[in-house]
Image 1 (spheres, one colour):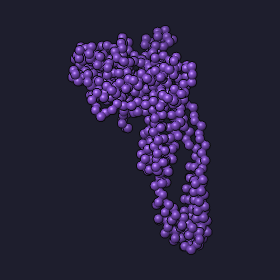
Image 2 (cartoon, helix red, strand yellow):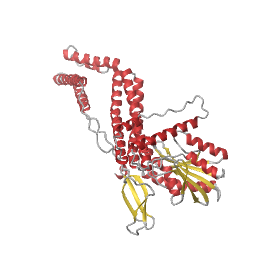
Image 3 (cartoon, helix red, strand yellow):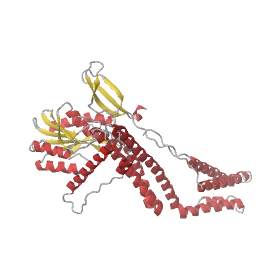
Image 4 (spheres, chains in turn brown, red):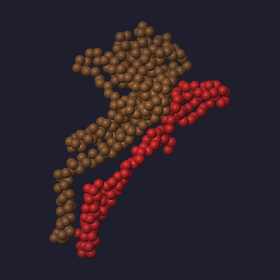
Amino acid sequence: MLMIPQVSQLGLPNDIIGWVLQIAFLGFFVIFMFYGQRFQMTIMLREVEKHLHRLKFIRDEGRKLAMETIKEIGKPQEDPAERVDQFLEYISITPQSMDPSGIVWKLEHILDVRDVRFKDEVKLMAPEADEVQLNNLENTLEAAMVLNIIYKVIRHFYILGKKTLSLYIIMQVQMVLPLIMREAEAFASALKAFATGQPIGDGAGALVAAKLMHGHKTKKIAKDIVAATVPLEGRIAHVLKAEGPGGNVGKPGDGIKQIIKENKGKIATIVMIDAAVKLEGEKLGDVAEGVGAAIGGPGVEQFKIEESVLKYKIPTNAIIIKEDIGDAVSPMRKEIFDAADAAIQRIKRLILERTKKGDAVIIAGIGNTIGIGQ
Amino acid sequence: MTEKAEPPTRKISPFSLAMILVTVVLSVVALFLGFTYESQDPTSALPYMLIGFIGLAISAYMLLQAQRKPSRAAFEMPQVITTILCQKCGFKNIRDFERGDYVFKETEPCPKCNEKMMIASIYREDKEKEK
């Protein structure tokens, strides 16, 4: 608008070229007035498209890596491509929640069925793989599956936005894309870690437990859960973690329940150690303390732990190691590895302050134990 | 995952090309007018020249943007370090992670005291910190 009077004041209003310029600027103004939103939408769509190309690349690379690992480790007789593609499209239907009573057990059942089905599928894909490798391969395929879902959802909104030309559909995808891209990059990094069996950031809790139980006799107490009785600061510590070094989270809820049952409820306190999401600005590997069951996932294990401790009124303490989602699923960073020792010091201080000599305590290291033995 | 993807070739769309051409033509015209009337009325010529230069800059930017190849999609995998430690004499061996390594795995005997060594840590090297 400011340009129009300036152009007309150039001293040559009757000049044809001057008029052409005036009309051109007026034209620009009118076009932007009516089609401004359309231009904005086109720019947003291009932005989404650019990220969609990157997501497709990540997804394809993930699939390729999963397939190469299966071929290398599993030595299948036939090409696993078809099975891998079927696996990537696998769905799990959550139970109906209209009547929420008993939903936890229904969800647990579905998760168990899913786990068994995944393991069977991986066994068929990689017949030569051992138990540890099977767990790692399963994790690899699950990461590839997440990348496939992310790509498909973004593609869905991109196509839908293009079809409907709805600014709001396009805008919401474009706005969340930076966060989604971060997550996708993290899972891409996780794929490599899973494929080679490297410890990941999520294994911080398992690492703490492993450091405490190392050198002591371990026994299997629940599905994919091992425990050891460790003397610690004059107390009897029942330390448990998922069975490593394969990619595994196990069922710590069942493990804690079992130890409580074996000790007839005589547990002075429970300390749970897990990796937790840090806020921007917080330092990676910072250790924080609190109360409650420190465990993520779909909630089934947390529910079981809360049920068990409620019965005997056992205090539950949480120690968390802070990291972001990218660090949680990618190879473990040094700061997180070092934080395990700081967490152990916190555990020792906590049991010294909250329990008496000779008490029995449970220390549960939560998280994926890939690349961490015991 | 370290391999790089083939960068897709990028063509300028006819619409973008037309837009750039129109902007260039208008800018050249504005510059021509600016220089023509500079001697007669320098105050009036200035906005023309300004429009011309801005227009040329915008069209050059649009052309560069349209021709720019999309960033190469590639994964930089972090370096993961395995530290093997002798519990007896404290001998340390630091090397790149190898498939099959895991924390607390017993490895080859210590070259100093012949005691069995153990993987004490596996973590990723942060490249930002090295710089």
